[in-house]
Length: 125
Image (cartoon, rainbow, N blue to C red; front, side):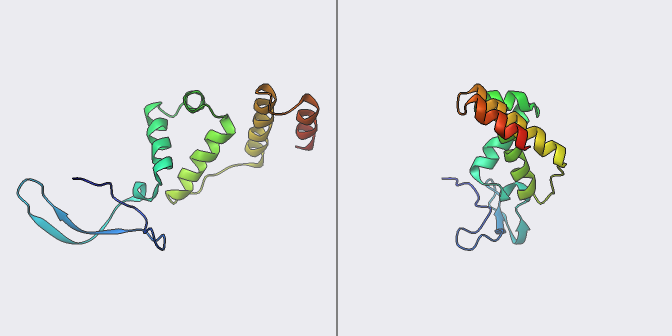
């Protein structure tokens, strides 16, 4: 039976290392320390998100629809993946404000907040 590789130590959270590789055909083995690569750092939820993002060719609107989440939520998930992979997502204050405005409008449209609260939140941005 084949198991998925664990990218992070379940005890301390440090990146795991592969120490042995084996050919399933001839059973040749290679020992040493091998890096699992950046994508092994992703947790199962992040990996599922990345697979969907790639399948939809990076179209955030389609990811929103497929997952049933707002644009800001998609961006937050993507930013977390970017950070987990060791990169720094660059975001300007205007990007953040635009995301927050979109989130307020989505909440209003979905009935999560009332008109007055939406106005108040938008004015505070």
